Image (cartoon, rainbow, N blue to C red; front, side, top):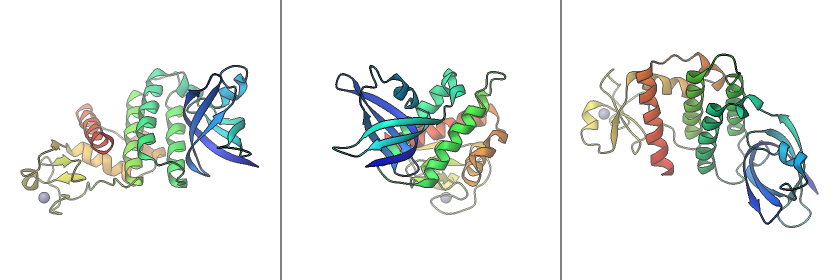
Length: 241
Ligand SMILES: [Zn+2]
């Protein structure tokens, strides 16, 4: 029996002397892992198509044991991302968090679509002419907040998460443990809080209400961006440690 997957390759590790295990996220089966025989010596063509970040059609033979990858045809290679150190760093950072948030073999077509759209936008913004650093930072942060929401870590960014009062500009705090913004009064009792700037609140709202395809239009000043990066760091640290 042979199964076919439309897979985004996440990573690999060596098994035995010549084989590799490949981890991927597919539209058909969510996060999954299979072995490919001989990819470390003779089967270079197969290992190329299974390289991390590649969007590939994978064929898995389920004859015996856990199943093994017998063939792969690349659909999108994302070569611009792969040639750009900054993009690679961002994508692998996201993959590490993604891997910890997502459970094995839980299919979710929306998560698959998000991941694919993120990679397509990163590819578009990784072209050699014109360094789109800010755009790629925003895309990566936006994808992160969207994935957090999809996996059950939705953040309250419109009201105080504790008393439900409307937020007053310039006076808000953020708590990962509470899962959102806190007003000045409620923040007094909260220990693990951090300052959150209006720009960061606004940008997270935009992330949650819009498609990744529109994120490259987002404008944010450098102070707002570093605050947003700090908030993202705090949330992921709280969730995955
Ligand atoms: Zn409050």
